[in-house]
Length: 418
Image 1 (cartoon, rainbow, N blue to C red):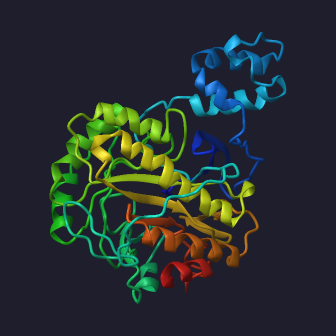
Image 2 (image 1 turned 90 degrees about the horizontal axis):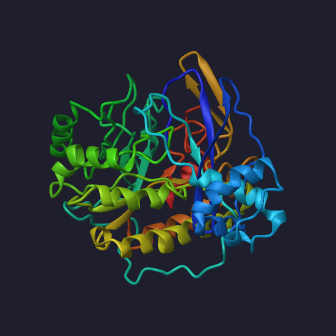
């Protein structure tokens, strides 16, 4: 998820079940304000899981049932309460809708994955704990902090607020250029991300990355959210082509990460990665890169923290166990949402005012956001299966940087200190 210049922005929402979230719902196109609607939330007990088990029947049945509730119910779905079928079918259609790959967009939107209240579960703790905030990556030693900072052309010189902490090990900006605009700087190791045009090309990438590696780039990120229409927007086959051409050549030189997927369900998220792995025969991976967003409207701080832990320790770990290519890899959480207060981003002469609350915590206090980070970061730091992470909040006014751009928010201070 990231911002690029443009006259309008889409606020993007997704649906999530217990460990399985939906594909994206796009709404609220705005220039000056983002208007929110009541989100559709697919709870863990929602019968749409039954529809997923019989997806062929559901794909034929649900569109008709939504139009006409008198539509006969297939025998495979007879155990789904009729009173629940409308919302279940809506959830199913949102999660089952395949992506329609087109050329990589030049405008992007924030991605928020609303979640249901997490199912209570015991999250496995790591057996061995490395020094807090430190890790070692396969392929090339990486001794910096696990934490990264995301930034873009609006971030000016805000990385200066993190110069005096050893917690930050790297930064990234969804591109291969450290400097994204005049006046924008980043202090620290820079991680390039492959981004291609509509012909799946980036002609300057290989030379730029060779130079970045020589200057200390600690790893390489593959395509950013290829399973999301408003991000890289690539089919699994296209993502595999990009990976083989632009990322695989650096195997053994620095750690290389799989495409960064959303925590969507159906044909996105880990389902997308399943298909990508089949398409990417012979590909090498040092890291599995995942993003995680949940909708704050349905969870409190503790539940939000539990959702992240469960996804990484259960869903992602199970995926790793199923695929030999990932059994010895670590997780890089390329984006994990963090609470933050209301802020704004300026696009040329326009200002987009929006509630910049990752976890989309409408009306959240700074203290609640800080409480979330205080509860999540120690677990991320001590988990030996997590190599690195970036809290999406990053170097943006109203997130880790205050709205005046002259200091850190309370959340940013926790990310700096803890």
